[in-house]
Length: 380
Image (cartoon, rainbow, N blue to C red; front, side, top):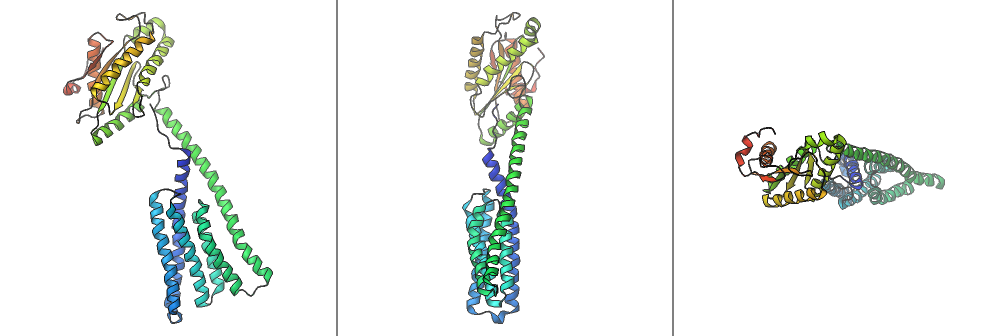
């Protein structure tokens, strides 16, 4: 049985996208709070707003709206590397920069404005630390706005202004480094856990002796195969294989020899599950199944014939078989019909397998009667 696993890089991209998605809620929330304050000041002191001020407020509001639209498409893409993230980051950065400069210019409040741009920067760090490229897109305009507020409106000494200017990137870089380190650690732990979980899931579906699918793996594969066959109207073939006179083989040669024989049978069957969608399974002591999606009855017959030839070439000695000096198996073949479920398909193949045993074993029989699944084959 072949299992598909998600790659480590895909897992990391999923984790980073989830971080960006959750962080974006905080970015939008803090941006909307700032916009609400802007609207409050406009309504409160509307007589102070000039036509130029109306244009400025319209511009920074437009940046927020465009950024929110881009965020919608970025989140919907489910990829952390989608280009809409960068456009959104650039627009949000321009929104914060323009809003804080407008606050200082129109209402003569440089101190709250400078604090506002720092709060905005930290909001973006908290929201988008998972992808520094977004911060690089958003921060230049915010840094320019901060320098404008500190230098243009400050009455501090040159040293005081220098410290004020330096604390902005220092705090941002320190916070970003801490959050990125935490994210990297958590991501590595998550990926390791996912890999181990996938290995455990695979072990549950695999037969310990033969390393092919067990009964649980068979059940999952047949359900998936039937779902595809129904949805896309594709053929599906099921082969049930039973080793002839295996009890006598065990009685004469012992269980260790029996285990080696089962391993050899499993290799023969699994070699004929050539495609990724095919599944070879051990569903009982000496009973096997081969599930062949998108395979019709004629193709299944050829594969059954090839399997019996391959087993004959192995020449596994069977001293107690009344039909052959070597180990043989019997095969029941059936093809999916629209009314089938997993049970009816299995019962019809089982009836064909019983007919193969009744006809002398070491052969295959195709189930031709769709109603055969309504009967139970007698025990052999």
